[in-house]
Length: 370
Image (cartoon, rainbow, N blue to C red; front, side, top):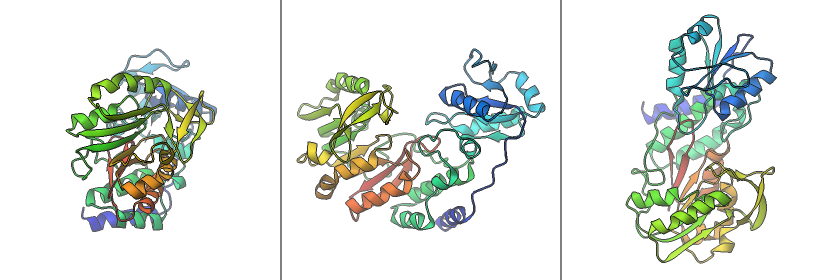
């Protein structure tokens, strides 16, 4: 497909009405996935009056809330399919490619297989990252045209169209171009690699820093921010392995537009984040207040939806230092098109790249290169 064809498809996707979604009807439901999302879907389906006849999982599981569980090769699944059951893929995370699951369920004989994006249009499944009601997940024609024109290469434009297509068509065959390796160091994006003065927003346990060093980068100065108490403890324990003897500061804080205290959902996972119902209160800082003289050359922001606030809190630094930026744009539906506009306003003339690093539209990263 030529880039002219890709651009035409993007326009058609955005100009067309959202696809009609067939109701689930009265047939029993079989879920694929017995993890947290599966349990959440089980509750939502039952609340809506649907019968859940079984849960499929590759792990042998005990019944979940009274619902029998099956391994994917269980012959009983064929009988459920012949009886007219609908299969729902209740898996939505960065690790699992949903397409083979859809294909497996079709091979078993399920007439209809519903993915998470489609299910969200039918039932009030809680919004998760970019997953929301259809109209919230797509840019306007104007915003899409602006971003298309600002993206620096064809891979970025194709990735953008495919991300929109996944949200508009609900089809797991979209957004297949995954840059699985070297997140924050993609070979086709000219991010800096030597003598980095690196800001790690959402440092987790130090995995990004370790990845940069393993990827051949040299780091001369590091400022790492991680507000989750358990993750921060892991970061501190790991810091000695980085071999950075000079400028290294580790902050038990989140990055924000202003310096304040906020409630935070701590779970010692990479998905911990700010939440009005959070279990702890953490300190946040505006980078311009905390480290006004740091002069970074590369900034990464993966902070569970707080990226816009963090960018505003380091606006002066970005304008003066013009560092390369790696900003996650999948935590909220509109991040895909709103964060590039924000970055462009802070660093005019930068080159914008878009890469998808994992499945289901997760780890979608905007790279801004001065």
